[in-house]
Image 1 (tube, one colour):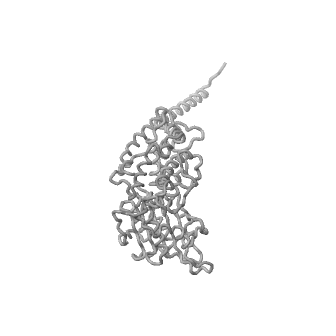
Image 2 (image 1 turned 60 degrees about the horizontal axis):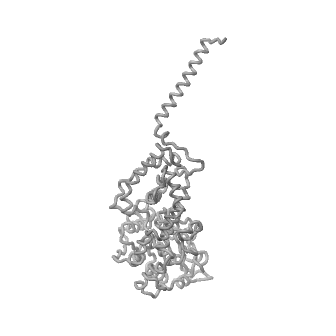
Image 3 (image 1 turned 90 degrees about the vertical axis):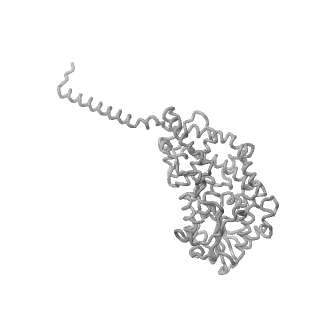
Length: 473
């Protein structure tokens, strides 16, 4: 027989009341958080969570949309010091900084809003996908910047301005004797006829001489037919090849249809919650916006980068490298001849003790890559093809390192008459503030005479006759 006292009854009622209150509190919390609970799909074991990755090493593999800061050299100030020698000349070819998308890319930006909503719907209604909650929230909260309009296509961004400004400061801090004091007879600046290269020039000058310094600096106006800084645009063979590379029977076109690419598209589609594999064109739009946003806002995660694991990034990087090598690399004997006038300019200015001590040019991605081809650097033993992705992981032709936003080649000439062992003039060559070790040079330091001899084929020729031909120089 069970006896229930008054006190025990009260105690039981209080316990039940407490349980009920806890249940009610939990239910209220569930109701308040229903939009998160509905969307919550726990990632599979081992799945990648972009939003919680503080390293995000894939940013170093965004090809020509890579942010300069994540790949530039960090030891330039030390590498530029040469015992018994003093810097006497500085020559630089720079790509413009981070820019806005091209006109046709801007026109389809609103599509991303529909894609965003569809991805959230996939997670909320279908409980499909493989992203962590933080990644889902990045996509849910993404908003299209309505200020990005077609009339500003390819304009330099704020980050692009800073790319060039801080780069100039790096060079000035390392070479104050050359770059600190402006003299219009000692500085030559030139850019192409585009907003992004003109703004990049102004930002570079600001980095050297302070705010609005470009208003007092003399700059050579860009010619309408720019054979120095835009020779590729004047070469119909190159222009035709640019159009042809979009075809389905090119190496790039074949790679788009390969098992490697199809598997990447399948992974990405599943990660975003799609039941069917999405077309390359749609995923390419996410890839482009991921890279642009990562370059515009270096310290902030891009919502669209959540779609790609490192494996996927490497596939898209390879596709871009493949196309760029066949367009601007070692695929044809025409390419090394295209920057003929620029090579002449470099060799002539380095060989002379006269003229400006500083020469600074601002151009575009294609010329950066063509210039590398003329120099013979970043060359692999074989061309990249649609079928050698698996064996090309350590390739030299990697546009992420060769041609990020604000990519540049800088050459320093030294007077070494105080060197008791070798008083001859020397040069040091840098790519994105990383020393280039040419064959026959020692620790990145070359005798000027050896360097000029190595590329003497560009001297004594009429570049207008050969720049768009496969003629052997």
